[in-house]
Image (tube, rainbow, N blue to C red; front, top):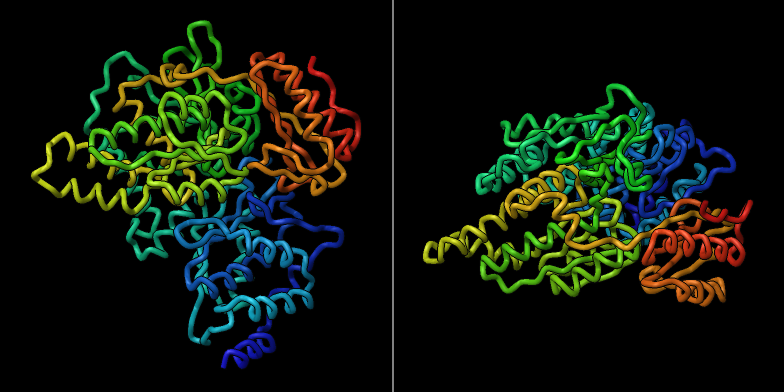
Length: 558
């Protein structure tokens, strides 16, 4: 019967829309951590094929699959696509190769690859004609997104799948929708209304415990830079559920200005400066989202008008402190663990390990790796320095929390702390890093801890750092190990990096190939900014000379 089904699918599937999406000559792409990203004009054929792949993955998992059309913090002219499944997880690494091969397959090759996938992946072939496989589609605000989402839908229907296009949504909202559909509503109603209701109710329940002091930054609206992307209108929708429990002034809301241009989390992080045109004032707090609202960064200026960035490391610190405090109050024996990448500032790692006495894990760059590790922990906190992150609460923890909440014989303070832990788990989008959810969590935690943003910033001092990029002929020539902190190839590069590092105080440096382009990324930190800049340049020169650099050698810092 299985062979008959495979044969029928191979011979009878028409792929009626395939001829409308030919593969352009000379274009190849690789599915990486961020999915596919490229100039929008080069993506229609990829989108169609990702619609096909989404149905194949749905056949294999027997779950709803999500397809998000976005290029996140990339320029407005670009676009991209990423797939999600299960409880909002990203496409497994084992299926990324299928995405890559599908993307450049001409029609004949595509049919062959579909047949091979049916044959090689148990479960994909065992389909009845009456069984439908469902795909949820989301779009960001780019002008190209609607056309590209239509290409996805054509791929879905060509393999007999069904779809629902939610239109304009943030990437984390689509993760939530996928997870809530697959959990049959256990984590929340599978709709945008369900998403807004869940977050707003949890926030209001937690803030009912807060007693804000007049004169602190909570007396003023939070100013949020929406990167001229989807996060701005979606935050406005969320605020309509908040009933004045949160005041946010939204700038760069998409009504004028270009997506991610001189605004947004990436612009703020890289330039260590406010979005263009924003006049910051002491005593106020500000934050920026990225283009698809899965990154969040805070910042402020002091009395000398000096800019200070509260990045993902500091947000992770806040969440770890808050949850650790509630665990103690609730008398729960569980551990908070922190999951970082090599990009985490060394001072943050030291603070977690030496001051908070927490277990810290270092994983390769990519949310899929951090998320998987965090799932293994009692409570796993992960944030990349760029502001993408979340907190995962293990089932054992939540079961014990529920037990304490329902036990009227427990001390009131213990039950109150358990209740706060429960609402915190509801407030945080555990499917993926979510700028809107994380924003509510940061505001709530600062308030309940009676902690100001400058006080959070001052918990530890970041070591100065510098990041550079080096163009290379072939990024695959560079391989790494130890969570990307050490180079294994080309020979001699790691030893040369270590020799340069030893010339500087409190220094470290590493290099890693980009996941999407022929580029090598260089990171260096040291005791002073001058030293970090010098070390980064020295390492960039090594990469250029030993790893096939292209064009002029990196210039020394001015």
